[in-house]
Length: 421
Image: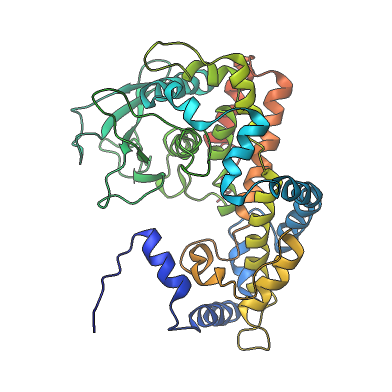
């Protein structure tokens, strides 16, 4: 019998989890144990346990899902009719036909060094801090990783971060993320008066530069490439919340101690900025000529942001709805399987009926192997709140630097969303 090796790389283990036939009751057992845990703690279901550390209640989370569903359903159905005119494999061509813009045309205008320069300039405008490379202060694990310091208006260092931008398969997993090295804390201060400064790590997987050209990026997700500019802005938002916190108690500084359904607010807030005309103009410059991207192309980027947005939203609402149903009303060992629940939620939320053999839940690691159990709705919850916050800045005027600075500080430095201990 030939034996193979299964690694922990996402594309491989997800496929195995999706199609393997062993341990068919694994998810059922997870839900059973969670329900048992909840009852031992005096709760009716696991969702009640989960909501103890979140902004929303179960009813509020369900109401949000229902409200977004009602708002998106009709448009999503129309989006499906539009895309049926094209082969599914040509979804990117549909986007190009509607907005007359392609990611390949944009890439020469989005070099990683210029994007980071624009991001740092925006950070200075929003938070009155300066970012400078500080290589040599701390060791790095790869020659392409860099170390930076963050300084306030008096040029006093208030935080540090590493940036590891390039793909290195198979030693480095795909995607983009933020990690914490150390948090701001007065408890471990060396002199008892000044807090230990926070240090973050920001990781992405850009294509490495060559001798001929720098690393070139895409704006948002397309049919062939993962979103890149948006992802860097998103993870930098997480890092800013960690680095700009004014809380000296390490256990609740940065994103620690914040309700789980609020942790995405700063990251989504920063995403909004990468679709503002002034921001795009500052970072979208041709790597060879220095030419700024045309106003017409910038307008198309902004418009293309909502391409099939309602269809994608309904997919997320399916995931969130199934998660809440499994952790509130579902009875492990009862007459319905977890896949029956998925089919019921899918029938309501999806313009295209789910296949009877759909087994998406077998690889839904967010709720079965991660921290999103009874909390997947958090993505939409935070997106609504961040959009609401950003709309206040738009009303005040995005060019009003004083207003934008004060409001941005409130969102990112935990002055609003810190739990009251």
